[in-house]
Amino acid sequence: MKNMLSFFAIAFLLFSCSSSNSDDAPNTSYSLPTIVFNTVSEITRYSASGTAYVSNDGGAPILARGLCWSTTPNPTITNFNANDGVGVGAFEGHLNELSNATTYYVRAYATNHEGTGYSEELTFTTLDCNFSTYEGNVTLISQHEVDEFGLLGHEKINGSLILGEDNLNPMDPILNLKPLSCLQEVTGSLSIMGNPHLKDVDELTNLTSIGHSLIVSNNAFLNNIEGLSSVTSSIKNLTITSLGSLEDLSGLENINEIEESIEISFNNSLLNIDDLIDIDMNSVSFEIKHNLVLQSFSGLDSVTIIKERFYIANNAALTDLSGLDNLVLVDGDMYINDNPNLETIHGLEKLEEISDRFFIQTNPELEKLDGLEVLLKTGNIDINTNISLVNFCGLTNLFNIGSHSVVLIYDNAYNPSEQNLIDGNCSQ
Image (cartoon, rainbow, N blue to C red; front, side, top):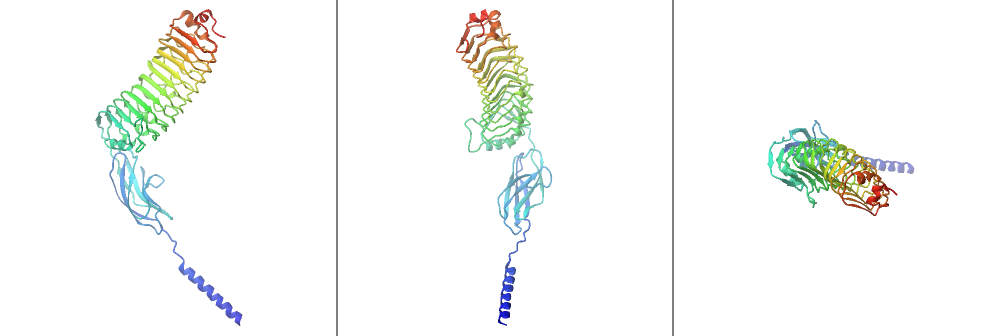
């Protein structure tokens, strides 16, 4: 009997505890948040703002809230979105890097543990370009200045445009050129330089004409210039320098003509210059130097005349001069200097004249000068410090039937005199 009473007492206690725990269990039923989207305002050519209100958190903390948008209906957070904090209440979101004259669909969103809830959808259209002309030169050295100038929506700058500066602006660097998407013509020069955070120039695709020079320099992470592919005008000068991430010149292929000079230098990742092949580049000067992985001059196949100077120096991957196969005249100086892996000068087989000085210096792997057989006229000749050079026979015609000025040959593996070359003692 005593045992039976003990059993019922224990059973009653267990049942009581169980009932108590069940009654005290928390309600873990959540729902999606509720959001009210009020309005879209401050609409420009490339940006807009929106205000919204998280009215119900769905029983769980709001982990994220903001606006999402697309050019098609029912945008979600997998499209473009801007996160504007956490919690319930009112907030304002900003839509950036939009395209001009474009209709966008936008919704407000809020996310809790249950998932993401969306507001009703609103639409708006960004402003169009105003097709006006800015008179004078323009220099923009910060993203704020790019944004402010972009608000004007100019189609044309009657002057030059400088984007960035060589001494940099670490407080507000230029990150994108979207506000300049209306720009179609710069009558002076376009300079893009000293922008360490700029990765592309895609937003300049409406630019068709540059009146003077194109300078792209000292933009360490600029990995392509394809946004310039609509430029079809002629330009005076092309400068592509100190672009550590650029691998090719895609984006320049539609330029009609380069009239005066081309400099391509200090581009550590540049593999080729093939995209220059269809540009009229006759009678310009060239400097191609300090491009560590450039392997050939393919892209210069149509060049027959170079004026003032042709400077080939410190191109570490260059083993020959292929791509210069149609070059006939250098109307000025020619330098072939400090190319550590240059083995031959193959590519110069049609070169007939160098009107001024001809330098071949400090090319440690160069063994012979075959390929210069039709060269019959030069100014001064200076061939020195090519420690493997033993064969000068490619110059035999120059010394026997051609004309030249002062000859300096020294510190090579073989150093023939002018008379040696006339007599046919051209190799060791």
